[in-house]
Length: 246
Image (cartoon, rainbow, N blue to C red; front, side, top):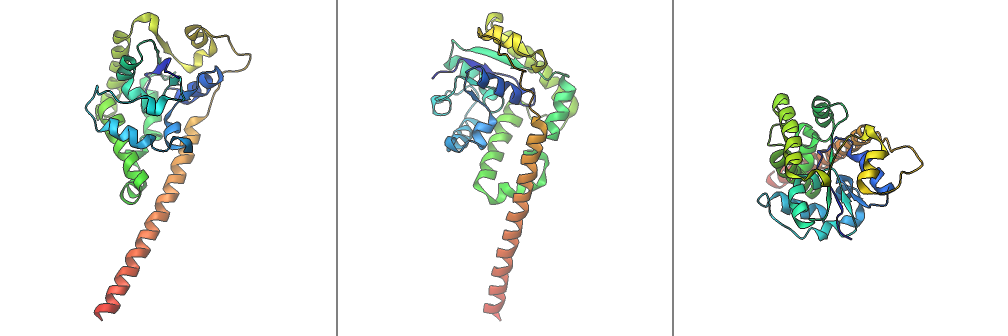
């Protein structure tokens, strides 16, 4: 397989619903959930850490992660859309936008996927688990640092970055290869852009905010378990030292 569609839109711009729609249209689609939830993709997080720790614009063996996909949306793929377009010059570009604009995108992002930076329990996982420090390192450098310019803690700057990014994509991609799209527009623009038939079913409307927040709650539970185990281990070591020294 080769990439036919490159999603340039930030996470939290309807990418989960778009992911489901593209799969329904016969385009196997890559998404952050394919990195962290698909057991068949073991090693993908290590690949994206390598991307995050390489200079912007670097080319990689993209087929290592996209071999079984013809489309990608969401993070981390959107962070390297320029590199992917250089590697797959015949691909089209999909720029998803939040239906309610930049301010709504910011609120949604801070409330969900920014948990790697603003939820202290995730820091415990970073300290104590390989997954935590790998995912935290990749997210911090590639998503929040490189793509969002490190401005997520400043609402006005983050909103300005979102709007400037839209113009960057629109100015860099020829109009015939670009679709600027909101999931509220449904099937028609997407199918027309891809040259495929309209499905006879409603457009996917996934409640991904609740799904993501459930994942975050599960991660927080895991962090408490890890913290408890760490405290217990320290207590055992202290008790052993006390006994030995006594």
